[in-house]
Image 1 (cartoon, rainbow, N blue to C red):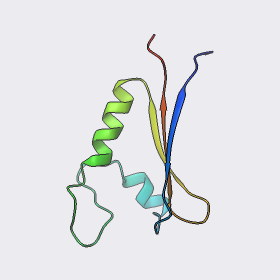
Image 2: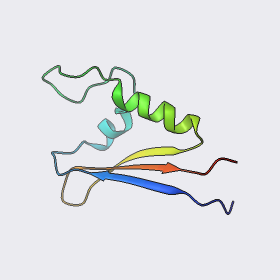
Image 3: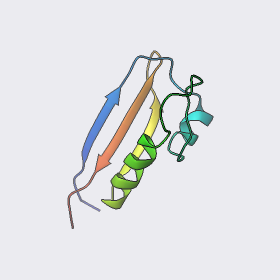
Image 4: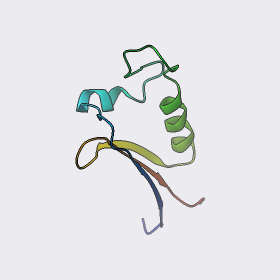
Length: 77
């Protein structure tokens, strides 16, 4: 308690993801795209790295559509 944090937010205006898709987006090899592009590893790697540093990462629905990606990083203890 009492520790400050840094928030990094990235908001896009794309088609967004459903709540179910947002919950799965951090799963290794899961891809939201139907065209088969990507490896499905990017967000899984981000989550592991952020959590290894005692941080959090979350995908939220952005106002007006799209995704609001929020990374919370805390100072080292």
